[in-house]
Length: 251
Length: 202
Image (cartoon, rainbow over all chains, first blue to last red; front, side, top):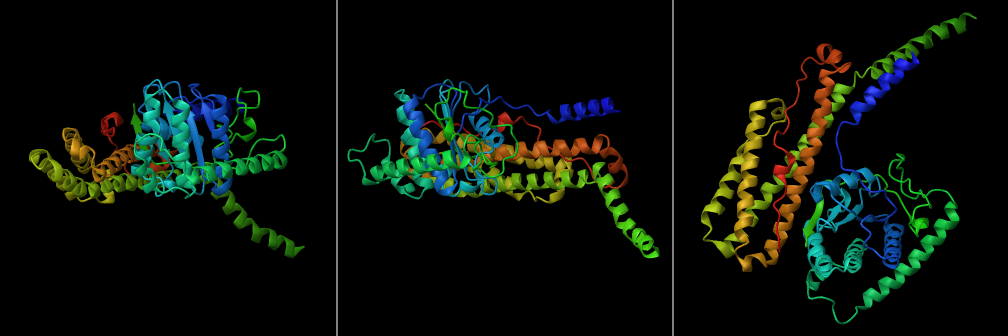
């Protein structure tokens, strides 16, 4: 009897696993650098910014670089990855994925359902064309990603406006460093530190679980044994979903 | 004593009913209606995204006209394809009607093709290409094409689940008894690759 049940379970399991999907790299928190294009300092700074963002308004922004898109279109790949990892909180769908595929020379910002109003297709296109691609063309991956993340975070926190970003154009670095940037940096440092302390004290050695109810253990399984130097602020997705909002670009 | 016996009999009925309910739902008696609802919801999302694309087009055509009025054939092709696609009356029954579904799909594919040519043509006009309004519309169009692709993918998967339930055990039992009126649903035939968003280079 038990064996029969087992056979049945296997049969149903096999039929459930029918749909084919690309394989994704092992998730290592908010920044997953599978392609290995980020230095550790940039990585740490990004993790801090992203953690600060989520601490402030629960928006989840993940940065992922992949070795290959495995023949998939970047739009398709990004959407599947977004859904499998469940980026954003389940009830708000407020996730964003910045996906970079250096070998395919493609980049995409995939926006969750809940943020399509803030991060419209047009504004994500501008960020890709003006902030990210010029730097990627010069092989400055850390710079392009950092600038893109800064723009996204600024918009998500309401501290930067779409007009502002549109006005930046591709004129390169603006000469005068805006006061806002300094202010933001300080804020991020403080927020990141507070977040870090809260995290350490509140959750001890256990897994991170400030994301709301993602009970599937599928995504977050990398432990401190992984090479990520900042595993203390790693996070898994909160179960958000996306319907293909956002924009892509290539260089 | 007598009281407790009556009470036991009284309480037995709801318990039996609850157990029967559990048993039935374990057999998947609810699967067909719930998969059907899910597929219908996915279908309305597909329609919404196609509608969203249709809504973008008049504005796009006006903008292109401002810079490239001489591309009349391309512009007219898009206008005609849009008119054709939006003239198809979409009722919920379309997903059970192979003929109507095919017509809908063809009309939308035609519009995709016409739009692709329009975008390709506009590459030849530097002023148009650098026009802020055009850039915005273009990114919205790209985004919408991509949302259509996602909505189609979701719908195809939902229909696969629903149709499989109708044809496999134990769903096939319920399909031939309780849900005789449930028919398999139509799904998109073209590969998803064909509905890729038009790639635009700046």
